[in-house]
Structures are given as structure tokens and as C-alpha cells.
Amino acid sequence: MSTIRGIIKQFCGPGSVVFTDDASIYCDRQSSTSQLTKMGYIHFWVNHSMEYVNPKFPFVNSAKIEHSWNVLKKKNPSLSSKNLFENT
Image (cartoon, rainbow, N blue to C red; front, side, top):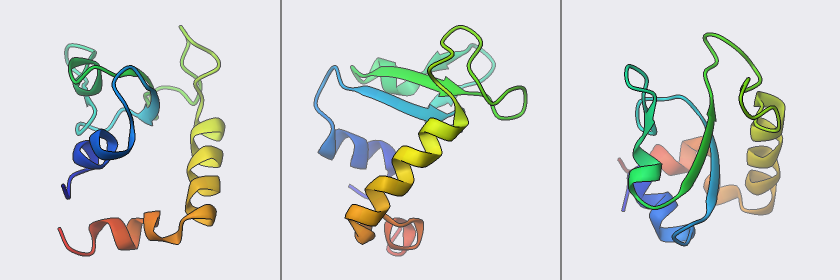
């Protein structure tokens, strides 16, 4: 599974809470629907073009998302962007 959604499916169980930005791989911006919700995840996202904190869910913000991702990458260097997309 070499796609981001495939990686999420591989490592996150159904019903897991997933925080992301609003990239099209995760969200349909026109309808404000989540591809991850359709896959069975609880998905919160931030639209960086409009805000850095989700107005409906203030606990979802860019700083927390970036911090969490950096902690994961430090614990597992294979999760770096370079390694994730090297073979796609």
C-alpha cells in the first residue's frame, strides 16, 4: 500500500481519530466531506488556506498536527516524507 490512505489503513484501526490538513487525498473541499470518514475513521482537518485552527473544533490546529507528525518521524525515521514517497 503506497498511498497515504493505504498507509493510514495499514497502521490505524477502524474508528481511529485522524488529524490532517485539507489536502485532496483526505478531503473533498467543494462538499467539505472526508475520504477518511468514508473509510471508517473519525477525521478532523484544518483548511490552511483559510485558518490554522479549525473553527468548529479548536483542538484541531496546525501546530498540534505538525508537532504530532514530527514526534512520529523522530521515533520512526522511515515515516519521513522522503521515505514515504520514494517508491511511489
